[in-house]
Length: 145
Length: 207
Image (cartoon, rainbow over all chains, first blue to last red; front, top):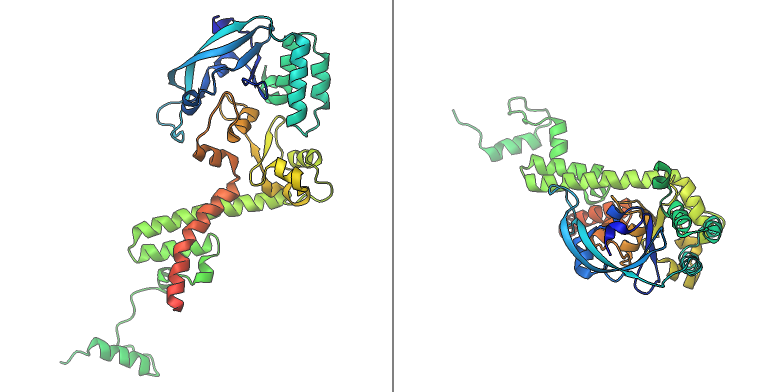
C-alpha cells in the first residue's frame, strides 16, 4: 500500500495497542529522530486513518535531515523517513476503535475527559472520531485549520 | 641618595600615624580593589552577586578561563532567580485539594498553559504519588513541568518520548533530561555544581 493513500488525520497505535498518538498529516507521520529509526519505534505500528483504513508500518529508512545542519540537535537529529506500510484487512470497526481509544484515554488521563468521551461516543465515522481526538490532543492546530 | 628598600616602605606605611605623602600612592581605585578581591565563601553563594564578584576577581587576576566560567555561572544564576521568581508569582504551592484532576486544572490556569499542553511529573512519577498518597506535597508546581510541542511533534508525543514510550519519537538521555526537567532545576544544577570548587577552596583556608 502506498503511504500517500492514507487519509489524514490519523492515529498510530503501538504493537500492543496500549497507547495511541494523534498525527495531523502524512508529513508528520514521516518525521522521527535518528534514534527513533535506530530503535525501530516507528515499525510494527498500527495506523488507523480517517477513512477507517488500517495498516501496519513494516519498513523505514532515512531520507534526509529535517532541520538545517547548523541547528543543534542533541546528537539525535530529527529526520524525514520513507515509510512502507501494508494494509490490514478486517481490523477495527468503528465500535472497536471507540472502545480501544476510550480505554486508553481513561487509563492515561486524570484530567476532565468528559467532553472527549462524549465526542468519541457520538462519532458517526472514523473521521469524526479521529478529529475529536485531535481537538483534545492538539487544539491549537485544530483552530488554525 | 639612598632609596628606601621595599620592606622599609612597608614598615613606614604601617607604623606612621600620619599618612606619608612621600610614599607612592597605590595605583588602584577602591572600586578596582573591590572587584579584584575574591568574595568570602558565604558571599560567593549569593546567586548572581557571588558568581559575578568571583568572575570580576578572576578577570582582574588575569585568569580568563575562570572568569568565563564564573560569568557562565552568573548567567545560570539569572535563569535560576528568574524561574523561581516567576514560579512564586504564578503560584508556588497549591492549597486545598491536591487530587491530580483539581491540581491540573489549577496549574493550567495559573501558569497560562495552552489547551492540549501536557504537564509532566518530572521528579516523582504520578503512579508513585498515587501509590503512597503523596498528593498534598508532590502534586505541586515544583514537581510539574509543562511539555511544549516540539516542531511537528505535539505535546502528547513529546511527553510520551520523555517517558520513552512514544511510537513516533525517541529521545536520548540528554534530551529526556532537557525536555523533562524544569528550568530552575537545570539552572540550580549548573549553579550548584559550579560552586563546588569554591567550597573546597574555603575548607582549605579554614584548615
